Each structure stands twice: as C-alpha cells, then as structure tokens.
Length: 108
Image 1 (cartoon, rainbow, N blue to C red):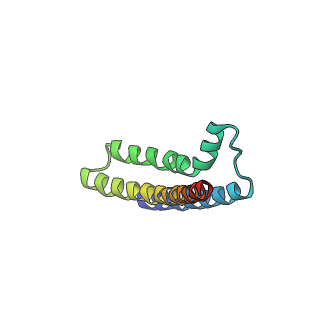
Image 2 (image 1 turned 90 degrees about the horizontal axis):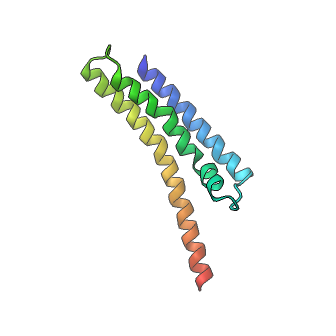
C-alpha cells in the first residue's frame, strides 16, 4: 500500500513540476528581487522535497514496519525523490549552460 502512495506522490510531483515549468515559461520571474527570482525558478525542487522528505521520515520512524520493509520502502521513496530532483538538476544545468554561452558571446 505504501508503494502505491509513493508512486502516486511521484506522479503528482512530476505533473506539478511540469506545470510549474510551463507556467514559469509563460510568466518568467523578474530579476529585480533576487530571492523571489530564485524561489520562483527553484520551486519545483522545493515542492519535491516537501512532498517526499516527510514520507521518507514517516517510513523510517514507523514502529509497525520491520527493518527489511523500512529499507525497501525508504529506498523506493528516496529513489522517487532523487528521480524528481534529477529533473530539476538537468534544468538548472541547461540554464547554466545557456548563461555561460551568453557570457562568452558578450565577452567576445
């Protein structure tokens, strides 16, 4: 049952992340307020952490689950979190590459 909840949470996190990226493309953040700009651009990763870290914590602290099941469920939830965060890291890498390219063009 917990595996189903983890998969459902992953599906909702991925869907929300994709919708947030689309919304951010349609209405990009203003660079005037640096903190607001950072939060708006990184909200997908922030929400992923908010969605999965409590789930991992609950799995690992539940006294009704034996050690082997905790390991399996914790690994699945951790892998789901890493899968979601990997998408964010790829996006950040792409943005940094574009920024580096623009800086090189500007300097030449």
